[in-house]
Image 1 (spheres, helix red, strand yellow):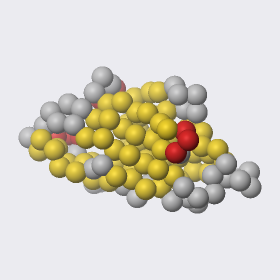
Image 2 (cartoon, rainbow, N blue to C red):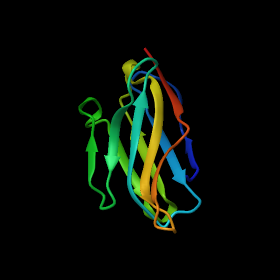
Image 3 (cartoon, rainbow, N blue to C red):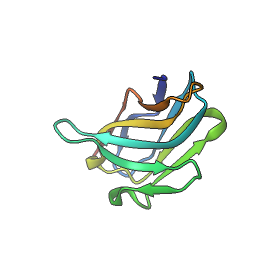
Image 4 (cartoon, one colour):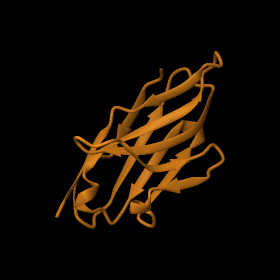
Length: 120
C-alpha cells in the first residue's frame, strides 16, 4: 500500500471550475492506470475519468467535454480539471492508482477522497 495525497476539492458555484490533484509516493516501481471516481452518500462509487499508462483517456458520459484527466508520470501524479460544474457533481472524489511495487507486487490503492460541493 502506498500513500496517495489528494488536494483541490472545495465549494464552487454552479458553472465554476476546480482542479483536483493526486500524488502517489512510497514503494512504486511503475504506475500503470490512474483514475478518478466519485461517490455520493448512499450510492455506489462511479468512474469519472481514467487514463492509461499510454495516455489513453475515457470519461463518464456525464462529464465528457467538461472534465479533463491528465498525468505526470515523473511525479506519479494524476489531475482532474473540472469545468462547468453542476450541483449534481457534489460528491467525494477519490483517485485510484494501479501499478507495480519494487518487489513486483501489484499496486492498487485509493486516495482518502476530497469533497467537491457545487452550489446552485
